[in-house]
Image (cartoon, rainbow, N blue to C red; front, side, top):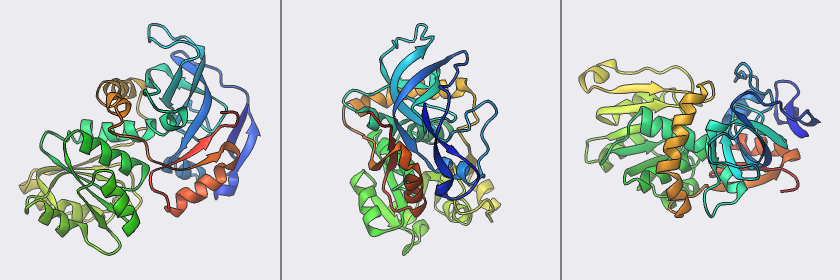
Length: 328
C-alpha cells in the first residue's frame, strides 16, 4: 500500500510517500480501506519528534480515518464488510489501509461523505471527553473555547451551542472571529487586539464562565482563572503557549476551581470505546440532522501531506485540513 512516513524529525519535507505492507490485524481490530484521513496538530508534533508514538502503534502519522471495512472480526457490532465507517486510531492514518480498534469505529453519519466523516473522530472524541466528561459542562453553564477557529474549536463551539450552552471563543483575526460567531459563538474575541478575560466577565454579568477549553496553556491559565465562575473548570488539551503557568492558588482555594487536562492518544481502547458509545447516542443524531457539521478548510491528495502540514503550521485555516486517498 502507499503511505506517508516520517523519514526523520524535521519540517514538512520529511513526510515522504512510501510503500508499506498492509497492516496485520491484532485482536479486536478491523482493516479499513481509507478514503480520507484528517490532519491534526499532534501529527505535526510527531513529525517534529515531540510526540512519541505509543508502544505498539503504527509509526505512520494520522489519528483519524474514514473508509470501507475490508477485513476483521466484526462480531456482534452490527457492522459488515463493505460498510463505511470513521475511526479514531493511534497512528497509521496517512495510508491506503489502516488498522482500527472496532470499538473506536462509528458509522458514517447519514448525509455525510466519507471525507466529511474522516474529519470527525479526533476532534469529536477530544471535545466530548474533555468538555462534557472531564469538565462536565452542565445544563445552563457557559463555555469559553480558546482557538475557536481550529478543528477542535469549530467542533466545540457547534457541539456546545447545539446542546444549549452559551459559548464564547477566541481567535486570531477578524475573519476567524466572524467564522466562530457564524458557527454559534455568542462573541468571538480577537486575542491579538483584545484581552479575553475582562470581556468574558462583562458578557457573563461579572460571574465568569463555567468551563474553559484551553489548548494554549502558558500565561493564558492565570487569565482564565480570573474569568472563571465559582466552581469553574479549566481543561487543558495542548500547550501551544508553553508548559509553565503562574497561577493565583488562593483563587483556586477560595472559589473551588478545578484545573485539569488530558491527552487522548495513549488512553486505552475501553476508555475511547465509552466515548464512541456516547457520541453515537448523543452527537451522531445531531450530525445526521444537519445541526452540526464538520468544517473542512482544504483537502490535499495523500502525496501532498507535506503541503497540508505547511498549511497547518501557518494557522491560516479555519476548521479541518484533510487528506484524500487516491481513487476515492
